[in-house]
Amino acid sequence: MSSELGSYLNIEAIAGFVLSEAKRLIKSTSGCLLLITPNGAVTEPSQSADPARKLQTIAAFGQELIFNDSWDINQGIIGDIIAHSSSEIIENVMEDPRFIPRSYPISSLVCTALNVKGKVIGLILLSHESPISYTAADLKLLTAISSQAATAIDNTLLHEHKLQEERIKTNLGRYVASQVVDAIFASEGDISLAPVKKNVTILFSDIRNFTTQCELLAPEQIVEYLNGYFTAMVEEIFSYGGTVNKFVGDMIVAIFGAPSHLENHEQKAIETAIAMQRRLQQIPIDWIRENFHTGIGISSGEVVVGNVGSPQHMDYTAIGDEVNIASRLQSLAKGGQILVSRRIYELNQDKFDFKSVGSLNVKGKHNTVEVFEVIY
Image 1 (cartoon, rainbow, N blue to C red):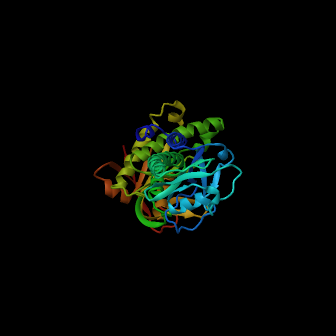
Image 2: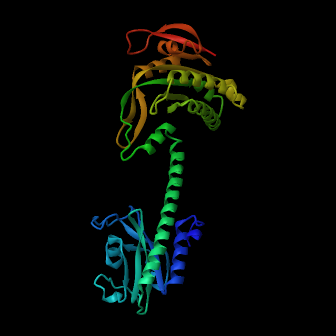
Image 3: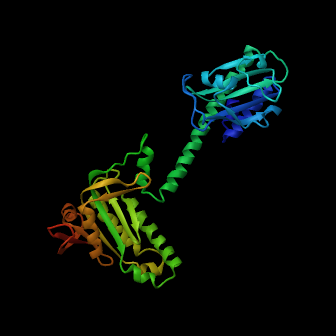
């Protein structure tokens, strides 16, 4: 039986096989395998009742179960067995004070909880419409069957949970930066991406004269080309450890060094920018190569990064002077240009070729900002 259980990939198949084996080995006219749903398992007899939790019928045989898809977890013989994680033989069910009258005949039953890792996840029940003396051997056999069933079901539930988690991560990753998704799934309890001060590098990239280009094509075609462009650019950002913060029209904002720590994030940002510019010229669509020319601005320093917004909706973003500087550098960059702040230049002057562009005024700052162009 243990070997056979390993070949089943879903809960229903496991439950059906287990119940058929139990029926074959233990005399019965009806039976069922029930699982607790939806809020987990009872772990202690003293645990308070939760009216939202039910026992769901996963597999069954016998007339009395045709109209009983779910059972109350807090009532009757079944509720008591679940609460105490026990196994029982009841020779005269109708005389048991816990018995709740049903419309179907039942005289005797043998029942055991499905227990795995100290938690009750459900139960197996076999009954007979005529009086029958179930033995201790029957109960021992059903307990052994339930033990194997509980392990198999628990393993399958874990596998299904992992598959569901991967699907959620994949879908969520289309809207939220992959690093943020990883941080969400790695967190225990409440997700903590509270705003904190952090030394990061900010990259802004924008297509020059995009509005003019939009007038040349139908909106559907522009969207198709833009999606192809974003796909290529995001792949480069991710390959160097960056986090895509947001898309604003045709503009991309990326963060290096948050939410995950990234060594040499200033260097990684420059490498990303160069890769983006080169990748743009390799996109196998002539119109994109001829009309999408991007300017990139990069700055680094201490900013506030974290969740910003309302309790109903939040964005993981960065706020601070360096964000404004990177945005301003991007707006000044010509198609194909990569402009960086002095800090970026000083930290990487021995790794890349630079050319001084001069100084510029940035809104909100009294001092001018020195600008350097990356030569690649």
